[in-house]
Amino acid sequence: MPKFLYVLCCLIPLVASLAQETLDRVLVVVDQEIILESEVTQELQRYLMENGQDPDRMNVDELEDIKLQLVQGMIDSRVMLAVARADTNIIVQDKDVERATDERIDAIARRVGGTSRLEELMGQSVRKIRADLLQDMRDQFYVEQLQQRYLGDVTVTRQEIENFFAAYQDSLPRVGESVHLQDIFLEFKASPESDQHAHALADSVRQLLVADPPADFAEMARTFSQDEASAEYGGSIGRTKRGTLVRPYEEAAYRMKKGEISEPIRSEYGWHVIRLDDRAGEYIETSHILFSLQPTSEDERYATDLADSLYALLQQGAAFDSLARRYTHHELSRQAGGDLGWIEFDKLVPLVRSRVRDLDTGAMLPPMRGEMEGKQGLHIYRKLDQRPSRRPSLEEDWEQVSQLARNWKKNQQLQDYVSGLRSRVYYRIVD
Image (cartoon, rainbow, N blue to C red):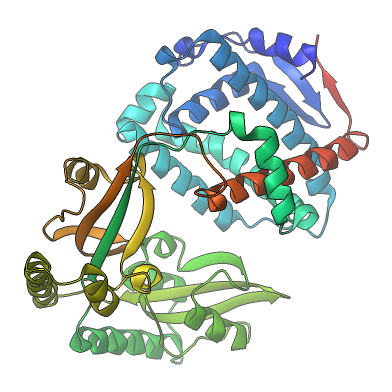
């Protein structure tokens, strides 16, 4: 890393005083953009909160390394931003930026313990935090689109993965203490009556939208849609690429004409009334009104009775994998007899983590409420094995190492790309 960047970063105050007011100054000029000391300070604070790191438990060298990376990343981002803004083929929608900003603030607030705690840590109101983050998020959208156009889908060969592991195995992150679990998951599924009710509601709203005169789609979405994230924006889910939405929704949307409103479309999330807002090649912009399928108390009672029956059979010696293949609602683990593979303890929700840790090998937990891929239901967990934290290996951690190798290759290509861009963009380190 260039020495001047290290000197710049060392001049940034330690994170312990991040919330305090400091004398601001320009550190770097890139094209028509500047990087202020306060921006680096704020970005460092956000980085630590989002990654759950406590600055009081970190030494000076660790903090300086993070600052170093952040400043370098901010310079690279400003260079790419200048190129992206000059590219007329890159379009960023306000609604996409606003939604992403709100989601990021919500995620940070949940991590630190709520919006009041977030305001206390940042020394600013949520309104001010959002205003500052909004522009950052807009810039990020420009940069991400530029990166996607250049990098696309980076792939790695088996030989590249093996070479990467041989070169970096000693510096790869350790695999945390892990547990090998089997699971039978019984989703709280809505009854046919609930499905019919949601369909009828969706059809009624559609009739109002195609009437003469038609009801306002955005207003109907804000009033009726049970997709809270999009309802706030009049039902808009923004610009998406083919292959990113659930299949029934996407297949319907790509058959539609601009401005057309669909018949109710059934997906795993419920019944959708879709409007195609725009289309450009493989990209579409859509809005929808969702009527989700809400299980009744009777539906939940049915799942509870079934879970209790299965647990009783398992206690009597029934084969776990046979019952999992027959009853579990988790499709990915069904064929493996409910086998979830090895999971790091830190990735389990706290309640499951505490209960599984105390289980003997081969023992089971009674049915417990939880979720799987956003769906609510009941789990029956069986503990197959447990192992301590360890160094990763190719044999046991191929998927994880493959992803690390892919990210490394992508980063190398990005660095080469940005190096080429720097000759096209004016930038200067301020003395």
